[in-house]
Amino acid sequence: MDVTLADIHAAAKVIRGVADATPLVPSPFMSARTGADFLLKLENMQPIGAFKIRGAMNAVAALGPDVAGVTCVSTGNHGRGVAYAAAQRGMRAVICMSSLVPQAKVDGIKALGAEVRTIGISQDEAQVETDRLVAEEGMVEISPFDDPHVIAGQGTIGLEIMAARPDIETLLVPLSGGGLAAGIARAAKAIKPGVKVIGISMDRGAAMYESLQAGKPVEVPEFASLADSLGGGIGLQNKLSFAMCRELLDDVVLLSEEEIYHGMQTLYYEDRIVAEGACVVGLAAVLAGKITPIGPVATTITGRNLNMDMFTRIVTGQDVQLGDVTVPGRAYKAAS
Image (cartoon, rainbow, N blue to C red):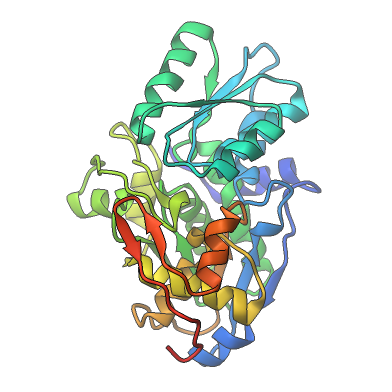
């Protein structure tokens, strides 16, 4: 099983006019910091506020007419994408989530007409209910990352970036289950084999990183994080995204919660963009000195579906509580 450039081009036709053509804009501040053009792919401008609509629309479009409904496990944005795509076809959607998912994301999914079921404190626990829905109620599961149609849909971001800027040398991609990273990397490297693709995640509960280190999919504990969209496992029976990330990613970098906090402040104060913690890991890794990118750089601002109370605390320099961990507040300083 694999995803090809042809699959990604086919997905682009499916999502055309609804989930494509988001802006690719320069960040003057980050360009000055890196000495090269630093570009932001604004997937937070999607109809559901996140890139996940691309893969979800492509996957739901591939289903036959006699499907009982769709289900998935999600940290929020994939569930929103599946709910949106299902609503377009008049299909039932049941989204299974852990209690770590922020309420703002739960509310957004319900607003699209889907049913939300909260089970346990991890995606693995929520997966049990999705498995039951498939086995007992005949629903079709749409994986947030380990599905060829989902990966191809996310890969259309790579097509659009490379079409707009063929000179891109480095792509900084938020890394969770690997669907986004695998899709973007497949598209970009098929078009320009020398482009560097770096996956970035938080330093607690980074399932794909730990799996790549182990050489096979492994389970990891899940923690509350400012980059909550990057949480969750990759599935011990992962069929596709693990192998693609192992083949295609040039490096994986991990960030502390403090570094993500500063990245959220920077994107807000310098580029006036409200975005989730998962969105800022590309620029945060550069600011932290963990990546020195080569040539023109692009990163994906993946979504805007965040807890605004927490975001307000961050941009005003207040402490943020994440479970039993306190991220200390810091007033924003561009040079820090």
